[in-house]
Length: 296
Image (cartoon, rainbow, N blue to C red; front, side):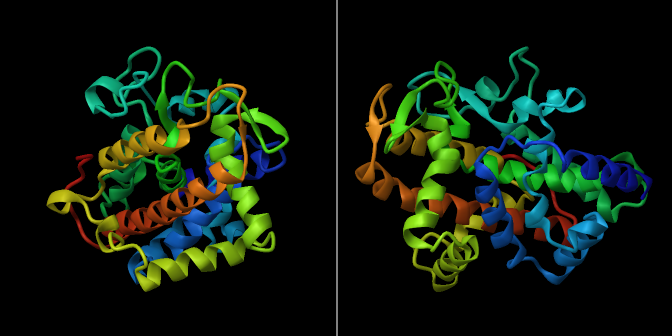
């Protein structure tokens, strides 16, 4: 595909630039690694075909690409696709009310982006529309945004920009609340429980999924009425968790330590797992059978 070759050149260029990561580079890597283990044979083949050659079939290695390019002039338009701003203290998500950018362009939010790129990927098995989209980009954007929507503060209050303006201390380090959830909980968990080895963390989360330690694991990948994708419920979950866990006891100037960390870590690991299971389920549906796309 000609579009794919153009994407590879772009990707090789951005790899030398410093990255700015959301849900942390580690978080996106974990989510996509979990998904890869759950692909059907058809989905695995399609993903490997769409990835640039230097990826060597590893989707996880490129799942942070949308963060790496978002501040470049050509890609600035993608910025609003990484998150959703909800009314302060409402603690709920309403698609019609909340899914828009700062200019109120409809569907320009992470839930809308997941719907859009899922729709594009259905062209993979449709020769008539195959050349209409860059499916490599669609795959990477969908995979990344599925991770973003599961980070609770990517569906956060407008007034504090999803926790970005809430300045706190993570133990002794000054930071903001959004960064705590993007990076620092995962980084602290890696050091404290996983010997600073992300593969050990991934195996532990995968084992929990396989053993079904959470009673609600089986329905995670399901969509109502057998639709291909259902991003709105994921957004609703995130704002609920943001209110119940992320914002609670995290006022400006507060110090977040062991109590906050140990209580929130299970939430973070569950969201990483859910993002991986749901990404796999979505790609499995896209690449195995024609179905109806919906965000409900």
